[in-house]
Length: 496
Ligand SMILES: Nc1ncnc2c1ncn2[C@@H]1O[C@H](COP(=O)(O)OP(=O)(O)OP(=O)(O)O)[C@@H](O)[C@H]1O
Image (cartoon, rainbow, N blue to C red; front, side):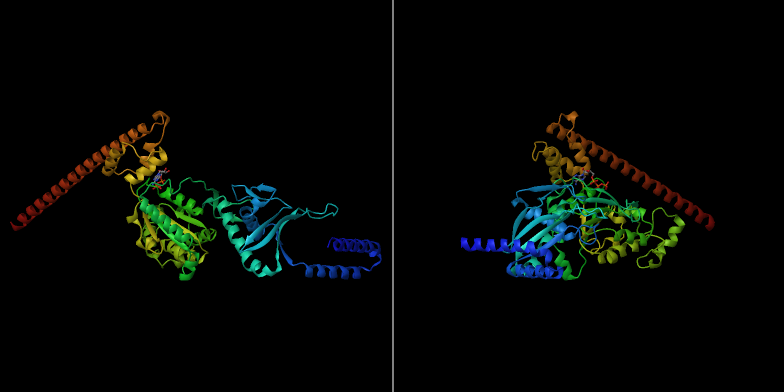
């Protein structure tokens, strides 16, 4: 065997030597013909096939999406098998991406089939004087056996795309958008949204509320996140609306942050009072992306029951009321933002625009909202954020002072039943402060004082209200009796 390999080696060497000698005397076309012929022979004999995935294709300004997904996939799936690794921080990310270095090869196995990945780059030829400033062109080379071609093309590449996108979603720096118009650095392209990094720390663990209700919400979110096929099957847009209502300081904004962190979505904080027309609302919406939450906080302060803008003059409002009834304002698209514009936005355009979007309205006054705005189907889940219950209090003590049980808990439980305290007020009372020597007992004592003061304040307010109501009642009774007396006098005079 060794002899035959040695014979083949020397035959090739002799052939190459001869070829080098006569190469310059062979016409170019013939040389080309030989090159093609050898290439065919080698391809025929080689049982392996290769696919190249370039970082930049055609449009050099844009990174190829398959390349980016492959890089993300390989960083998680097989980079640990490489000897040399490299780390980089992408523009859209806040976590370094660890992948295998150039000229490294790793293997992957999909459905029992082994494939090879090789990272490489094409370095520009320094001898060539190029008009353009040529840069390195990176690429991945995927090698697999020819008999697995169908599996690789049909399933493996899709698998990489899907998994890679998931990895990118987890790693990306999430954003908080607000609809204050801005111009980006391209100059020619203006955007309806400006953004900052979304870094709110609230999670469902830090949220103080009834644990059962919390479970229900998490369950609903998970069902939504995994419901792509289901929504498709039932012919509904992949979207969900949540209405959060409750008094100030009960955690509505914290809940939005917790949802965004749980689903890893971006947040679009829509300031409706800054939107002038229905057309503008549509334009703003079209610029949002999937995997996002669109939030309208204090919806009752943005639009009133009939949809008229708060700041309009009274007499204008009278005319507008007519026009702004749902379904009547199609011609007004360019002149004002209306309730029906918002309803159309939720039902029509929003449904038509891609999937995986959540819309959240918050309000302190549920009773002020138009039922049409919050009916099921538009706002699928109504979530009440209530005053601090004992269960919610325990979540706060666990997070704020690290205790789940204490002999002062019973007193606090009784007090919380007697008075309406928002979780924000309770949280403030529990804050570990230097003045309290960061002592748990001192914090709880302080909280008891705060709740007692609130209780006293509430009792005082109630007494004042009762007194005012009584005085009002007496005033009405006095007025009624004087009117009656006046009538009696008038009647007796007329009888005379
Ligand atoms: N349920 C809660 N769980 C944990 N922390 C809470 C909760 N409610 C309020 N807080 C604390 O109080 C602060 C204010 O709460 P948040 O802004 O979420 O209330 P809100 O209901 O949105 O108030 P508003 O209606 O005034 O906007 C938060 O930063 C948080 O620290």
